[in-house]
Image: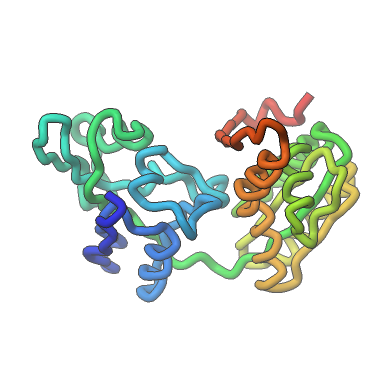
Length: 266
């Protein structure tokens, strides 16, 4: 489906977009932004990954802590079944509570149930300007303490990503200018509230109280982009690290999630 890369229709009134599975995620977001809208799911590889791949794998995204994951935005799917029949699931409305939710079943099925040939996706208003920060910790437990303090204080960051020791080191070795080597854990935090600078200052203080040693708070859009780039570099950085290890193992990644009650990490 890589050549099926057309954006078929953008419907600002209903906040919907219809597209083929080969559309690259960032290209879709850029297209709907011209209408004052956004497609919130933003996997780290959004400049390369496709909508069809995101749906097939049930992709998350850097901002999923606030805005949700791919499954939350898939309204309907156009499919080809194993016997060649065409099928459509879902709806073009926000509300859809009647019958089985076959669309949700298909998201994350990795092609085992059908081939996705089209998608109807929900959209949101363009996100407000955001600022980001990066904090590195001497232990994974300290990073967990910081996360617990941030949520307990009532903050709702638009991104809250945790990198472990190996990943932090790989990104630092890959040349990210804000990452220092030797950290046991790194938190990447973004805020898009009405006063992001004030919120980041508060969260930076909580990180320092938890034991953070290297705290970098962006003062503008370009520095914020650099902070978020540390997260987007994870896959290429781990790949570069793996290539140096005999017998040149491949690097593979997966997502893990835990309930808030399991933080701090002890």
